[in-house]
Image (tube, rainbow over all chains, first blue to last red; front, side, top):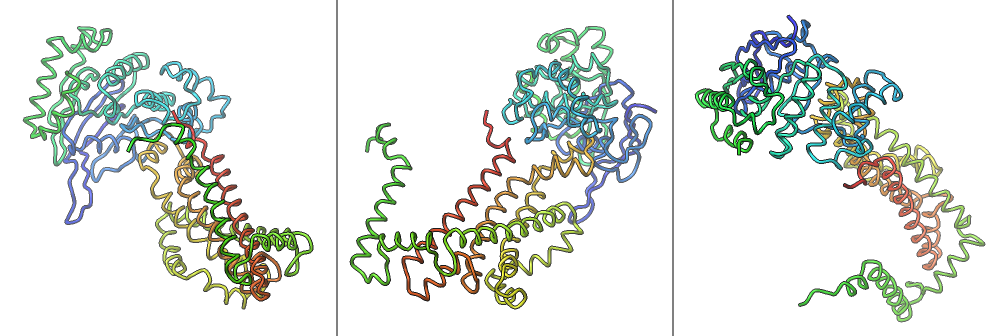
Length: 274
Length: 263
């Protein structure tokens, strides 16, 4: 089975006074080329799921497969974009984008044309020799996305990648991501707090419930997106569509009834709608 | 009170205040030297004469250049040995729990021993030669660099480490591109403390027993009751220590270019 396959995955953490169950058995399949967003309250285990797929963590029971192979650690078939960008502060934008290529043993001369291409794709021309702290948050996250995309991974894992950005930058980045994934079809697992973001970006939205984390429901968006050509329209226009609002509202209800921590969900999703 | 005008503020800038303080200090020195026993407080002129004597004919077995060179060489060698051992051990302790388990107790034992308490052992083992000084400096300068390297490695942002891992960094790239640069600011502040400690330990060791060096000049001048020479030697120690610390700062800025660039 290609894509990402979680089968009966649980994860328990050792805590003082016993184990803490972060995930109860979760089974979830993200087929090849599909964009799946996971929404859910803080502590529902969505980041744990992503770390398991990345190979940064191991399940207590169950199996995690990517591209038909069991995940035993980080691998070149997967790349991760983090909320806090996680760029190397001591490397320039060029060096950060080319970091993974260098790790694969590619020489600077070989990597150069690829790095230049991604500088252009991510609209970072003129910033190649800057250090990350000299860039805005949005630009830093574009560097991080370029660092992942340049490796052409089968699977892209994104952990609230736009969560640290202001509302306007966030919308720009969402459009950018649509443009990028339209150009190069990729399997994407996208964690977010924002119901709007999930609805706009994903083919399917997985709603998780918390403590212990479990899949509550999976909502299909792909057919609507195709029929109404969301990808070709600006975000604000899509967000006004009745179909968009219906799905968003449905996701909201699901989150609430999932026993989601209401305050948490509210603070993280409303700014986008305003 | 009204705020000082821009002109006022620039006139009263730090260099002006600093210069005025130095002049005031020299005047106070001269006045107090006049009014007290000249055998206890040397006059500025005595210090100048002593400096000229040390620089030209020499004192305590050598000229200023010979003594200074000897001290600088020993301080640098001791510092290099200390940094060269503390860095790899600190890195190992930071990256591996088992290395921490091995070296942790040893460091905890060595740490509270005052540097000067090593001198008697150093003299028994190495005599009054260079080996004893390097030994004392080693044990004095070792701990600050070790502790800071260890702490620096442990405080590298775990998300950055995770990001490097998922983008394919193996152990070598992780060490060179992530751990070392991430720990570098703390490592350098440890090296700075170690360097100052090197000078402190060196002069102390030379005071107790040496054939050459600025500490030897100090000790001989004390026995000869020659306060002018004492001041000259102290000034030479201060200049050497400050110069080496400044040079380390130059190296640091060279090694950490990303820290000085601002938006």
